[in-house]
Image 1 (tube, rainbow, N blue to C red):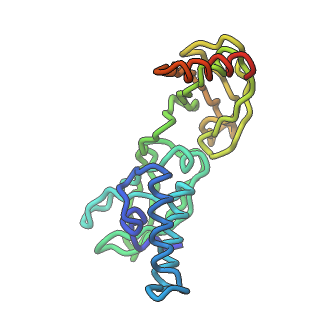
Image 2 (image 1 turned 120 degrees about the vertical axis):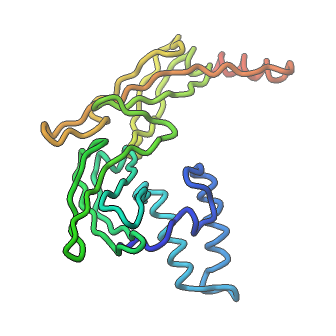
Length: 225
């Protein structure tokens, strides 16, 4: 699939906007350009759909380069580093380059790409993630934990860097900065063919009580869950 336009610009949102902002912008644009409407435009509608899917699936590859250089820097998120990518990118004054980045790529990994008898070096940089950071082959995540769940314990679902939902057990009396290790949900190692772990650090959220009603609601939750 060829990436001829910046999906963030197509949707009219800033790069790195939250998923809710992206989703809202997509719905507005899709409604405007839907082929069944008077303002409809089928080609534009397809572009909007493609842009939304690119961002939602974390497959958009930002290009950080100048047209006259042979070094092409690309920023990849954790999902892309784990699974690798096969996509096409367009560089002004150069053309469209086909990217085949293998699973388990890391920061500063370099790959050669040929185009029109010229060779380009693709240099991998890391894209900042909102909820995850990378430490070697492990991924670090901070989890806001409801105070009632922290006190009473129970099971919760955690979304991994690859979008998978994993159920983990919260022990009664869990405090802030306690660690939960989810094995085999970290980065992928091309050499060993294994993945690191996801380390989840809890952050207990203490609610602000401003009325007797809110206090009673909290007491009820503590009592009945």
